Length: 166
Image 1 (cartoon, one colour):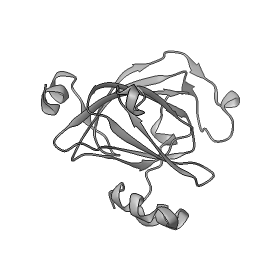
Image 2 (tube, rainbow, N blue to C red):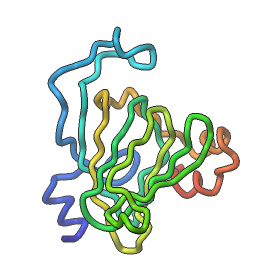
Image 3 (cartoon, rainbow, N blue to C red):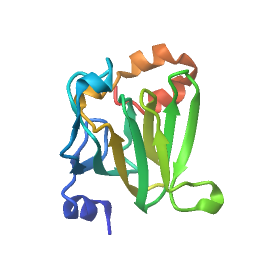
Image 4 (cartoon, one colour):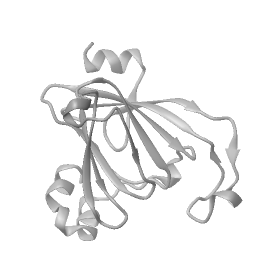
């Protein structure tokens, strides 16, 4: 299948960080604010899950959320997940099925870490799933401008410039 066929078949929509997504699960149960702590405003579902598709042309820009996010590889070519930890350490992880060459089919990004993702092969796509717990809410989503993130981490200017929209 082509990326466009998958987008149509799964009814994916454009995501503000880049790529295409569709929420596939949102638990009915909620965690009250009083239990979540001060970084959350309002209740959160126990968990949420989405399909997420990136292409060679559409990357996921650096962003962060309060929650841990688990990436699951489904189909296509591997993607490169870039992370800048809360402590300012850069790392990357290859999400895919080629275990013998260091790819992993699942990876957890810690809540509060900055992260971005890109498809590294030309004319290709990656279909993944992302599970967030406590459940995703746009109130927890931070999509910084290039200048803001570069001021925080000037040593990573090159990768930040590549994986931010403006």
